[in-house]
Length: 103
Length: 192
Image (cartoon, rainbow over all chains, first blue to last red; front, side):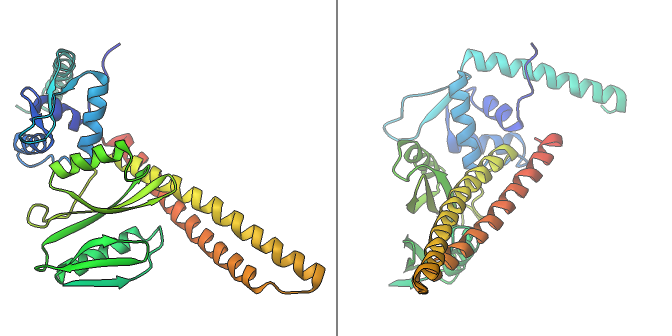
């Protein structure tokens, strides 16, 4: 069965977690990647992180005793899902460009 | 300097209460503690903090909510205090205004906005059931004592009227929440 589309928030969270980041770091990274367009809110991010850990797409790392902030990182499963989503998005973009004639 | 103000806000007046607390903060009175009828403010520079009230499932001291509070704190959103109600809690949070100049927004996607409205609607249904029961109970006491002893139970009558008013207001608030949920679901069919 083909994978269902990821939400924009989940796509950008997975993309941000190629390296370990804590919640605030994810929000900043997503903001930078999207040039300020996507502003993840704390409650939404919290819900998404918990669901992703549950699905095994990301791991919660042991708490850093210095910063006392929990960090997260993508898993192999998460990476596979992200790549599949990228292929799906490429199809959308390619078709859009082909039919609308954009670059 | 501390300033204590007694004020009553009903369960559906969350936005009104929040606007009032933020207005106090803009005048240099930052909320430090809130009870059911009491608000304690500390004098600070004006606009130091921005406040946001949230409604959560479970008590404020539940492991799940404590984990959430810790996460919010990492984001610069501090829990000032919370009030427990049966099955839910009402949480007062704040952040530095310079870090959140546009206000604290906790939900940036449609699904979590729907979830939030569902928690709110669920609690209102509980309030409706409770107040309706109390109103009916008091009405039956008033009616039966009128019929039996020809005596008017004033206290029960007042109680019945109050509970009925509370019930009607909760129904209106619950309907509003369901309309919001409906609109958000419609929106979700097209947008994420």
